[in-house]
Image (tube, rainbow, N blue to C red; front, side, top):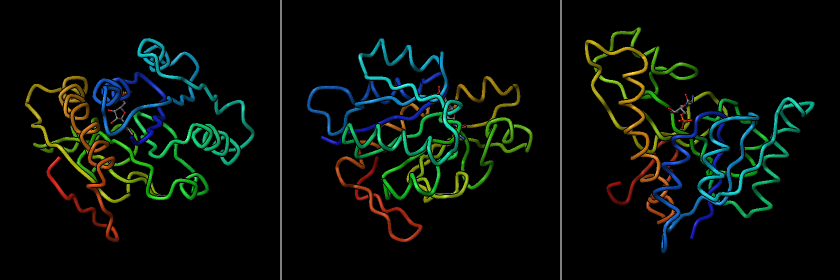
Length: 203
Ligand code: GAR
């Protein structure tokens, strides 16, 4: 069983989707801990309700990004976490953090990368006039949303869409795609060849 840690800053709907799909008997992967950097974030309440351990590490209480990331890494290592899922974690992770978990940090982003990286992926898609939007699960590298792509899901952009309606359509796909990718990783069905990810079986 693969021990998963989730890092999140906000609402936590992806955290809940991961827990709902993975924290079941005989699952190949299980969410063992939530690490949150924002006091009062809704995801903390979700963790309490789901009975998942939550660790609040407020980045503002740490003198530097490196020290903050070191505290996060230590909390994950203490719990023998094998896969780190960023889920609405609104911070860049440092190269030193990534070196502690090589090939073991993944992220979900609300756009079809490499289009619309960074903040406000949904708003960027709407403003650009694309007809198809979606989400991407990718390995995290040192850039902003630039790591090797594992899986994507597309949704239409409809004429009446605003940011909220499009974001909701994308999130529905996120909640399906993210647990499917974690399961595939836990089964060893995902391999990285340079920048290309090979899936041994369909998600
Ligand atoms: C998700 O839609 C995720 O794709 C996005 O934040 C949202 C978090 O929602 N992530 C990014 O924009 C990362 N650049 P949630 O807290 O309800 O899971």
